[in-house]
Image (cartoon, rainbow, N blue to C red):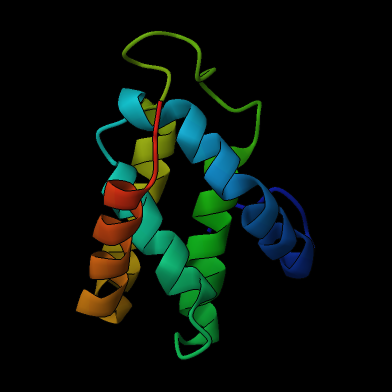
Length: 115
């Protein structure tokens, strides 16, 4: 798990506060938007096991942090590190991401005005 801080509660609060504004700012630039939103819904689902929630919150916290290994403003490669972290988190918890989380992500992306 990648984390912004040593405090999981602070990471969750940051993800809850900063995820949607960050996604709206970059949704057209990233091919993994649906996976990120599905991960968000899975992480915020109280029925999701705590270790899965922690893994996803860590990956989403890395996504929203304004500074990271490869700055997001660099065309094409700016989100590769974010995508890699999220892909690794999703691979490790895939069995816990339900059709309900994916459908909620599709609905959210269809309903929101991104970009």
